[in-house]
Length: 167
Image 1 (cartoon, rainbow, N blue to C red):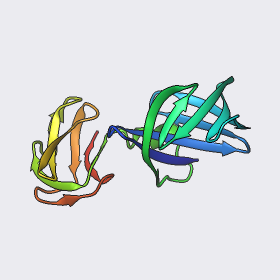
Image 2: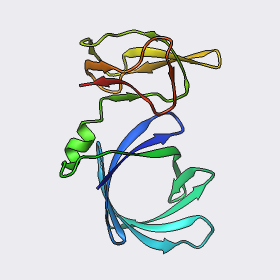
Image 3: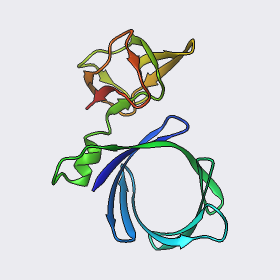
């Protein structure tokens, strides 16, 4: 079982647990489960055929954009494999990371609006990052309590760095 954090072009992040057996992958996200079987190449370049939960779909990849059955789904920015513990249940792998707030860009932390122990609502501003003279507000992806702040004001961060953990 492998765990990935997938970054979309819009800055959204998703957690995916992937278990591969032969030609079939079982993928579990925070909200869905998929059984995906690779069937082979399609009729045009960069087209692939997959059976997803029993239904056949045409997947086309162009310039990082993923099209399923000719409808744009998303643009994948990148995917990062996360460390897992031996014997850890899939639900625990995903649940344990859903409150991580990840930096969507490289920049410098200019302000931190919360402190450890604060209760926060989903969408509440947590901190701001400045990049190229533009300030980006980073908001809470889930409601909960700020367990840990992993950055300091003035600190440089890279895209994908964990900034705050909410439980």
